[in-house]
Image (cartoon, rainbow, N blue to C red; front, top):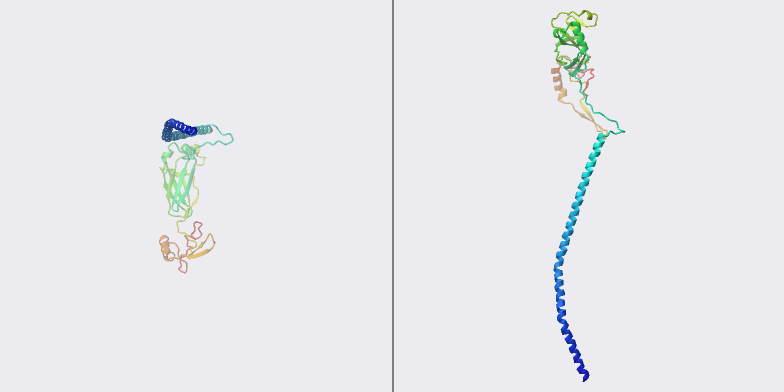
Length: 303
């Protein structure tokens, strides 16, 4: 009986113990749970703030890097400019130095000269000059009014036909265009002066023994070069009614017929209109390509 009575007492003690500790444990558990809930709610905000701070730091670093690169570029440009300026001012030892100079063609060369050129088969171009020394010689020989008493002339001489023509010019010109009617002839030009009074002037005594080519009222000054004027005709040595073509890659030749009515009829009419006084046909009445206007010429020949 005594043992049974003891056991219930123990159970009662245990129950009493558990009853005493359970409310405290509950409050602790509730507090811990509430704290975890609060921490759980605050955790996303703290993470977001950290991410934002990291992004800001990254952006600032990028901006600092950009500013540094820009600064380095500016410094490099300034260094290059300084080096270029130094290279310009400092002469190079092993390289030759060149000076840029400008040369203008002189208006005259102070020489007594006459030159003739063919501009076209029927137009000549002549230019000339008289030296100051020769001008002073004429003044000393004929007096101080020599240039007022005379006027310049060009004598155009056709040596092929032995024809000379005179062209009056003026003292303000140093070149002249001359129209001619006989192409393919040889020409030469003289520069001289004529006295307005048409009377042979008197030389000063000290110049009588010198070579001053005075003929009546004409004073010779200079002679030009000889010039053979080119032909103004349509030149033919040979006119073939075909053309040979060659392939530059294969070197194969091909012949094509190009004979047309122009060759047979129109060309003959054209020659008759242009050169009515020349022989255009042979003894058989056939159009002669070796006509006098073309035969023996060294000019450009159509083949």
